[in-house]
Image (cartoon, rainbow, N blue to C red; front, side, top):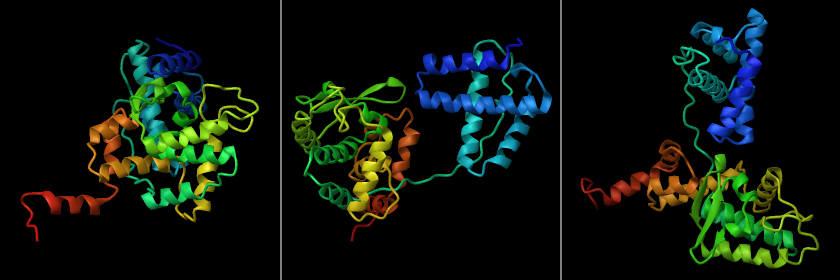
Length: 302
């Protein structure tokens, strides 16, 4: 079926939003990669249709991408987007064979995330100036991201009604609007309560159910959270290259090092695949080796 590129891309966007429930950012990333393929095909062959492409065409496109993108991860992402596009066309009976099925992604290797020690996190928390409401807010933000392992988008969207105090859980809305329950500790709750007392005195609150607000009483942006974490780390004298995600990595790493079940960590992080969570088993090999030396029955204990 000779569906046009424009119609195919529009339909693919709807599929990603409705069928796969992807976030707007993820949808746009997929569509950007498909548009890139469309532009390359048009420049090389003129006006054509997605259904006309062969494995050879896609292999040439992948080779072209490799000349333009040095980052292996970027190459892998583009190939993943193209595969998803052609799988969509196949499911919708817009093509009879999937020419992307045999495409191979470059090996990306394993990039271990930067992790903070408990002492470094304590120093960050202690470095925050509590002279105004924003100081209490920033301390609660750091404690919540580390204490619950939240993504930035999950933190900025956290609502008062998401806190279940009696049960000791919060409801977290993650990727694709999927919700999960995450335990929340007494230290984190205490910092949130300290902030909420000051928040109640703010002259204007526009988003009343959103927990973390800016000075104008509105929901925080991802950029603001990034700046808060960077500035707090600098004030604590931490020279590691960190971001808000570092607190999430640290949450997971400290759990695994403490002996937490990997499936439980997967559930708390909201990972769809256990493979994503398994990276945390590689972060501290010395810890794992020490664990085996201490507890395995086939190892001599001196």
